[in-house]
Amino acid sequence: MPGGRGRIGLILPSNNAAMEYDLWKMAPEGVTIHTTRMKPTKGCEPTDVNAFEKEIKETYSLIQEVSDVVIYGRTYGTHKHVNIIKDIIKNVVIPEEEVIRILKKLGIKRVWVGTPYIKERTLEEVEWIKNNGFEVTGFDGLGKIRGVDISNTPIFTIYRLVKKHLVEVLKADAVYIACTALSTYEAAQYLYQDLGIPIITENSAAMWGALERIKIKIKFPGFEA
Image 1 (cartoon, rainbow, N blue to C red):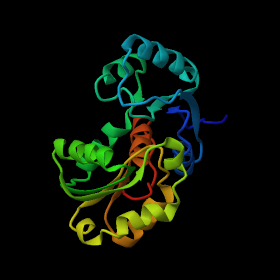
Image 2 (image 1 turned 120 degrees about the horizontal axis):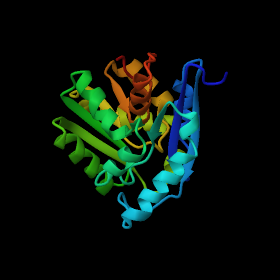
Image 3 (image 1 turned 90 degrees about the vertical axis):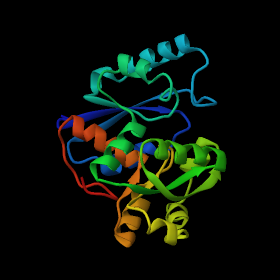
Image 4 (image 1 turned 180 degrees about the horizontal axis):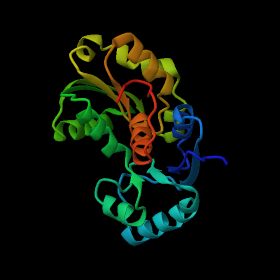
């Protein structure tokens, strides 16, 4: 049967056109991805918590039966209301949490941060990495705001964003590339091959966390764990 080895549910905002692709590329034989979507929102936290809780319940109900584990593939609600998400979706993967887990598992201390975002949002990512105990050797962003624009980013735009900061990058133990709406599968492979240090992306970390929960091991683009 399809997904006989494992079924991964995925919750995305409707303007994310990238994460599914990355997960499909990483999925080993016998593992399937099952996606449902939420309306895109402004900001990272809901203003109406009751409405947010209702939306999470309704969205989860659409994939609960076909999912062994669920990736919540967006930032919305994860900073101040992650307890609501975890109370409703019992076996849930929060990509940001998995980024920190894999960095710590690999023994990383110094990180170079790349994002598709404008400077203000990029600095939020930098502070988040620092607040989790890592030194940041440098950072840069692509200056994008809209989810679809981020998802339309060419592979080598991401690659060159990192490579143009080689001095700072090579001072790091790993590179972190943020945003689930940014397809990083190929770029992470090329950067890992060329730089020889782990390339952790939000999407690869999410897939790592999901497969770990259902006890499946694969070779990831950008790192070995």
